[in-house]
Amino acid sequence: MTETRGTIGWMGSCYGVDFQAGKPVVVRAERTRGHVDCFPVSVNDPAFVEGMRSGKALAAGSLTAGESFAYWLEAPFPAFQKALKVFPTLLDVQLPFPLEECVYSFIGGGRDDEGSKAGTTQAIAVAARIVDVQKKIESFLASGIDPVSLDQEGLALWTQSLAEVPAGKGAESSLRAVVYLGIERSTLVIGRGGKFVSAHGMGRGNTAQIDRLLKTQLAGGQGGGGAAVQWMWAGPGAADATLLKKLEESLQSRWPGPSTVHDEPETFLARAVATRALLPGPLRCNLRSGTLLHPVIAGRAEREVAGTALTYLVAGLLLCGVNLTWDLMVKHRESVLDKEAGSLADKLAGYHVAGAKGSIRLKIVNDALNPRKEKMKPFMRSFEPSLAETIGAMTDLARKNDLNYETLSISRDKINVSGTAGNWKKCEPLKDFLKQKGYTVKLERKESLADEKVAFSIATAGEGSKNE
Image (cartoon, rainbow, N blue to C red; front, side, top):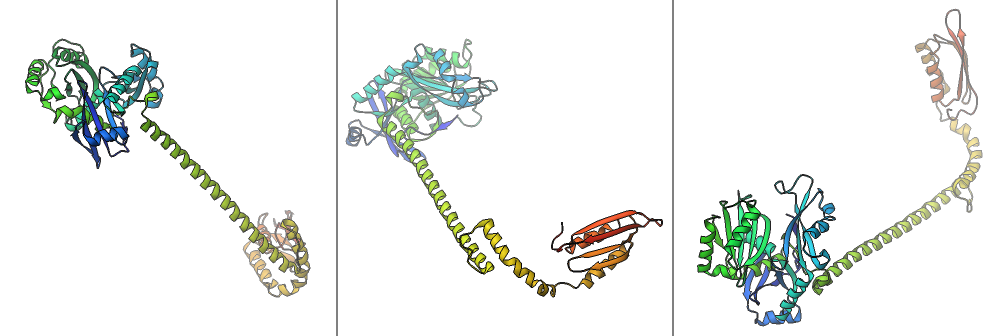
């Protein structure tokens, strides 16, 4: 089951209320370290009365199984968000009144290997007529209580029963029946293991109706019982030993199984709605929604939306500030570099280059440097390697590549060499070598001679600064 937060999960305490024969039964719930402790409270308790009057204390109640319902739906989509688009239509088909007259929500139940086909999604539709919700709120207000949350009774009974008495290992498919025995009415909740199946309102202690519902929901409508059921009892009637014994004897003959009475059964439902309002968990819902939403919940939602919007606004402003700061830093750095480049240009040119920038600045500097470079050539050549080293290297290449030089003229800027090579490719290493030395060379070869030698000539002209 999908776990959702409690209706008033931001609070540390609240009051849980269960109306029994028109009178409220109240508990005060205190959350401590993910656990809720509940204490019975009199409706005349000054703290309770003042808390309800001032609005500082919050209360949670529920709609009975007769005033609301929880119904399983299945949609032919593997994703819950897609299934959510068709659930209202599926729910509308099940209702005897228009969907527009209801408040409703869908609780994700996931995919169940037993209950659904592959590629489908199940959910519990929780709904109640708007007029019934309004009447329930009015009955609370008549007792001086304005509930922030109205839970669905069947779901509240089911989750609280599992929380107080877990199903246990190996009980994944075991039948479980939670029976709430009120003063004037009863509620039956049916499930398998930990999975909720259905909830039904009925007359007080009506064993025939319990038998019929169990047959319909769990035995496929077949006659007779026979299946083992874990019986869980709650409500004020569960404290009546005589009534409980009579019901157990009537049911055990057809639906045998262990029978357990929940602790403090009179306040069980009040504990359930308070716990679900404070703690996150499965099957949480609030039927006081839409136009009937409590002002505290509506205000909280508005503040959360406003807080989220403010967070995005602050983040946007910070991002704008970062961008502005970065732009300023980049512009400052560009200004510093431009000043440094201008200063260097002035030093190289020997005079102020004025406002010239970019390629124009470089041209001015080059024009100023070129005459100096020409004048310094004789001086720089004294530091260059001797031409004798180049000639020695050419001699080594001739020996290794079967080259015979007939003419050789070499200077710093020009070279002219001719001769013969052992074959067409033998003179290629010489050409590459001269290029590495900075000469711009052109290789010419002639047809093979009678002795199959290849005549070649390599000539270079120009300043010999770079290869082409």
